[in-house]
Image (cartoon, rainbow, N blue to C red; front, side, top):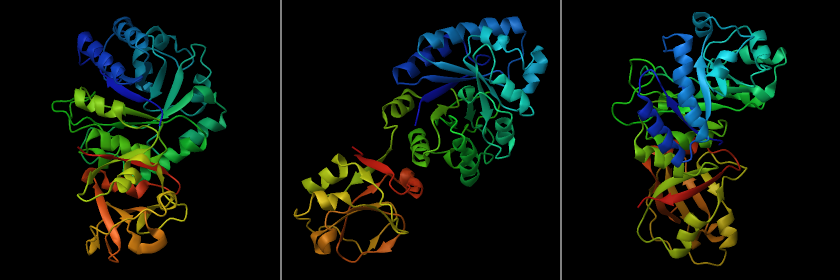
Length: 364
């Protein structure tokens, strides 16, 4: 994963609210901003004045600022795709094309003398990007970002998200997607306030779980909070979490030995390359802790999806192997269930790929 980002809507907030938000986000390690021009209805002069002040402040705090625009914005403000100086005057670092042109225009815009990044809408899964690439753009200035979806049940389904993102990964372009705050009374650019996720399955999930899922998918660079304003707790949760791998929150069961705790919380785990349909297998602990005694203390008849197993010494050479159950399965009677993944995170195990790394953190 790359960076964390926030979204701001200058037409819906006071400058003080936005500055305070930028300060809090900066303190928690955020470094990019999505700013929306689509809902702004004002003169060019007033837009430049308002956005310039905010963007200059954000840049002093280390943020990169991308403005969301569309051909209608170009038309309404009398801007041509071959002269992006208006956006440079706002002190933005780039523009996001919510709706694109024909491909040729985007390729030319990527060579703009203002040195602005050109961000492409990633959510359509059509040959639009391929067309842009056929026109040989400056790839160093071309990036991608998914949409967010205010209307309940209108967000992307997971398979579509994966396929549309794959197009951008193929060309090595930087990517971004949105997570939604669960704080009360949040808002976005439009009147609908049912959350603003990219993936529909994320709409009601805790914000850190949404982010962990994107980390597990391993195809998105930047994760952006779409709505205003998240809670301080949510900002801290994203700022403090691991960004390089999935760290599952787990409930630990009574009776877990010290060596099993070392396996759980001190080891870097990875899914074996010869993957199982039933479990994620982390096999290095059985090598490192060979010879240690793993007493059988919690062997329920059924191992449930999301349970964490460390094999007992009754399993011979498998003793010390750690597993995450992908589905319910009958216990041989030799397998200790040592803990369980936080319920909201269990679905993430479906996207842990062969050789993918992960860790655990105990819920206190």
